[in-house]
Image (spheres, helix red, strand yellow):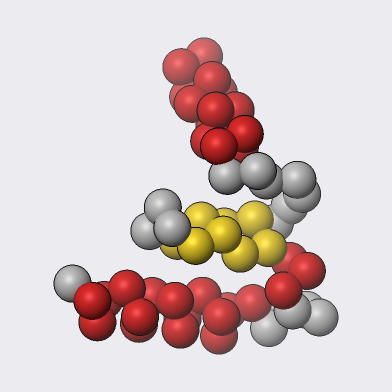
Length: 57
């Protein structure tokens, strides 16, 4: 458990996460709650990132 906590802290620092909710997609794209007026509005943003990533693979 301690290793997971340390890993999470390192990733939080590496991605410069300053608040929640924050999601990193494919290790390249950081999204956060302030990208949309509602959390539900964040879903289409995540969907478009996933589609983009899948298209490049």
